[in-house]
Image (cartoon, rainbow, N blue to C red; front, side, top):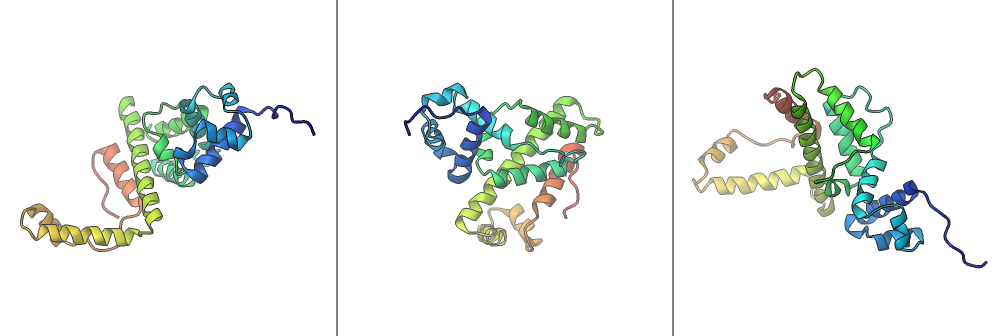
Length: 214
């Protein structure tokens, strides 16, 4: 068969191909050249779909962020739990998020759900927006740490035990009396769950008083 021009694609199809590359190989591997190879197209043809890689990243985050109806009436803990699951499915999201201003319908829908969850707090609008941004940053940081541990094969319990051992060694010098005092009260036991940490953060941000440790 004679070779002709590759069939026209839709923008969502191009974005989906970019998501496939980033999911499998990471964000560093996602170049316009790599995406063109994935699609079997010319590099310059991609610019008929997106202005540049920054716009491509915006569209990728938007495309994977459709919760459907699963977040209807969700509280802040439900929203952060959903964000964590999303970032674990697409490990490139935490790296792509900083300094990004997202305004697609999926992301605006998530923002609307977050503001609805905060509607009864009496907080001013700017404080609500700040809380949602801080919680997103917390989730991104938590997932980044989870992924790093998974790559090196370290469990939460092992990591905590090793860290506590190093702290105890440092505290024996006498240079850190407050640290020694805390360590003397005991820091053993399993590390706190994501939900437990998130609940404490939410309580502290919304009321100014952290919830009791769970």
